[in-house]
Image (cartoon, rainbow, N blue to C red; front, side, top):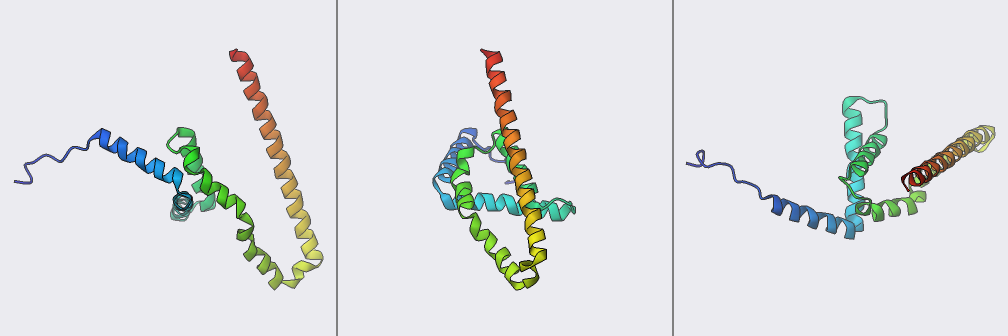
Length: 149
């Protein structure tokens, strides 16, 4: 008799209400936001390794997050507090790298200076490129706003 009964219909209003409650709880909980960002990172790792992509999984995860933000599937407020915490505690993620340098004394000599020069020049290139990109973006936005008015 159970085979003759149609599948239970889900109520769209009930789904919407559950979705709204979930989004509100996510916005209120720092731990939930951190967990969501962590899950995005893990999903990117799984996809990257599973498909054998030459791109790190963290980059794949951030591309998915960017697509979700652009499409509106994820609102910035839903991950803002978690992202701010990760950025504020970013120094903690570099402690293992510093300890690894201390294990290799050759990095404290001429080789270390060469590596430091490469790192600093890379940072300067990234900062200049970012500044130019932001400036270009603001100029385009200003031009679009002036054309619309």
